[in-house]
Image (tube, rainbow, N blue to C red; front, side):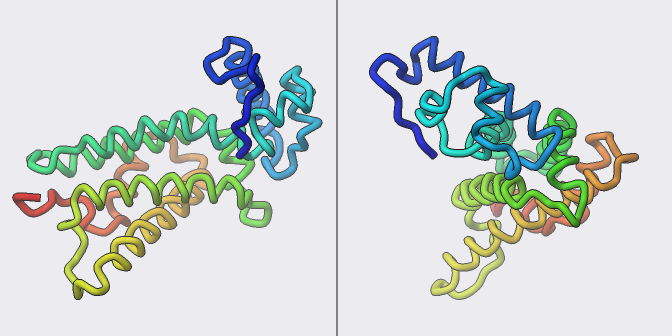
Amino acid sequence: MATQFSPSERPNDPRAARTQEALRAAVLRLAATKRVEDISVSELTAAAGVNRTTFYRHADTAADVLREALYEDFDGIRTELLTIDNDDEHHRDAWFAVSARIAEHIERFRPIYEVGLGNDDALSPALMRMAAEHFETSMHAYLKRFPQLVPSVSSQASETLERASARFVAAGSVELMRSWVQSPALRAPAAYAAISMAVMPPWLQAPAPHGA
């Protein structure tokens, strides 16, 4: 994604911040009505009240802007995940709370997820990829912190297993999001967390072996 700024419009410049906020607000509005892939730069800049030259200092596509907006919220969930205490006797409770936070995120941006994930015949590949990439990066970080969680295999295959585990959990998390959005009667975060705990690998939710 483009991150170049002119000398008069640095990221810490109030004008740059206002532009970024305007673009994010506009893309969130538009992505609640159509897939992000279908939002043109012209449409987004008109909605945000910025010109195309300014837009391209911040991003290349509408999906880039949406990713930043969603990741800002997702990053808080990752922080919570990475502060789970290995020796916490309520480890599963901590995982339950993190899962519930994902449900709260979905509710916060539900119109966008309904558009992008609610219809199997019109899924948004960009939205699915955004979620999967963030989940995968989060799981990589978590498993790097607690490598003992991953079931043992030969040392030669350990790195592949860790990578595969992160991708497996990420893909499953996206499919859980899809299933949740496609079940509109289910809205309580606790219900989402309960389903997540039921389908995710048990070894992922257990405290790492002592000394990790």
